[in-house]
Length: 124
Image 1 (spheres, rainbow, N blue to C red):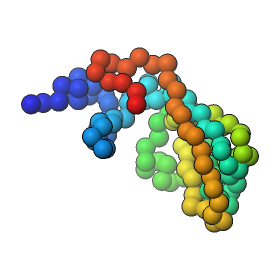
Image 2: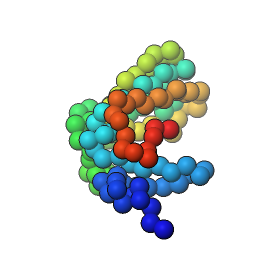
Image 3: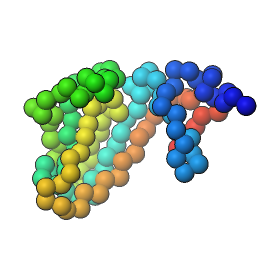
């Protein structure tokens, strides 16, 4: 039997199932509205894998090919202290490197959205 959700939501991509839960990547119009709130439970610097971002990259979804061509100089390290909060739009190109100096870097990462999802989909 065809999966009606996939058919009805053809602009939603990268469908996958993990631990019995179905995931999908929403279209860019939905992603533009997603805000990540990162509460840092530990301090995090460049040597223990702080978040790195490409300033201005939140304006549109960039392909993996485009992101792969970025040189190291475009990424900016976002060091954070214990208890600090970092807000970012989900489309922002970001990464975290392996720690050179392994220390705790616990982060509570919560994504907020005011977008109403189509029937049959819900935020998890």
